[in-house]
Image (cartoon, rainbow, N blue to C red):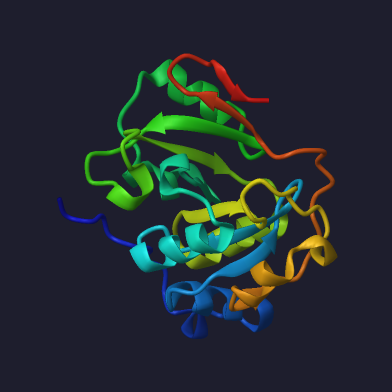
Length: 199
């Protein structure tokens, strides 16, 4: 199975990006991890097409690969290559909830990376409404892994100073910003049935 192509946006140094955002994109392109704010908690991002980067996120979180990860993007076009076709009514329902803290479990495309899909055959995806995370995904030029920045089983950090020292030590860049004030991580639903998987 051939891996799908990674992001196609230009090198950050040549695209007008400067400062914090450019550094974050450079880290992601080099296979590193970025700590960033989301709508409700601080999260960890990496390039989903980089198997070693995804493995580093899972190791840092001490999270089994079978539990999967959420992918975020700035727009649906960035997610579409990773997703299988579904009924138009289901697609419209998901897209109407975005951007925002709504995650949908979606059948994966046949060529989606195995380390993202695992045995489930699906991907959890959302389009973020958080300005810093949306800007990061847009500047990167594709979908990003985004998972809460905590060791598995520990509370997800709502403030940067709540991020565990081991997590802070395992990332290569911290994107400036604050969480969006949401009270809890995104709701997760099945895109084909609408069933709530996490409220």
